[in-house]
Image (cartoon, rainbow, N blue to C red; front, side, top):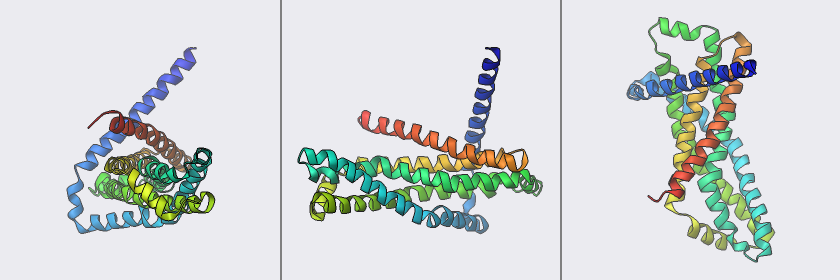
Length: 262
């Protein structure tokens, strides 16, 4: 019993320490946004924009189109029994725009980009490159974290829009080929169902998810210790923590926007 209590206390202590480090890193980095006017920081930002956005497009495209097709296929099975196949466009459009678009985009970026951030910064940490930067009076938060944070905050909403559009197009193909819903009818139902609230809720989620992924990945990398094994553990923790926060924050954002009248 005492051992279990001790282990629980140690886990809570480590979790609190990690959360505090991440929040402090986010606050410190946010105060440095103005330094992006310097060219060498903007060059680093452009590089991170390319990594976060362009390199992930093929994976995002495949996942999004099949997500839309799966939603249409499964939704159509039930709607067909009720003779309401035309409503597939409404269901898929709302689901992709409000929930599945930002959710699937965030999961992809957490697994690909967030883990890479943790591994890259973790390797720099254990090889003492971070210490070398500090000795040269180069702040790691400005030089390493800031470009990654801004890039994720920008590209996650952009990729979410792309994910939602491709998913809806995939759903339109399934609706037409499997349930006989014309593309014009699908488009009409989709546009009738879509509201501004659905769109800005999805974009806000994507913005929050992007910041979470960057902060978690960078903080886990900067707190790495223990050589190559430590880098592997930091990478795994970055993905797991990002996934948990994406799911939890996604629920609360939806709750706030659709249970509370604005």
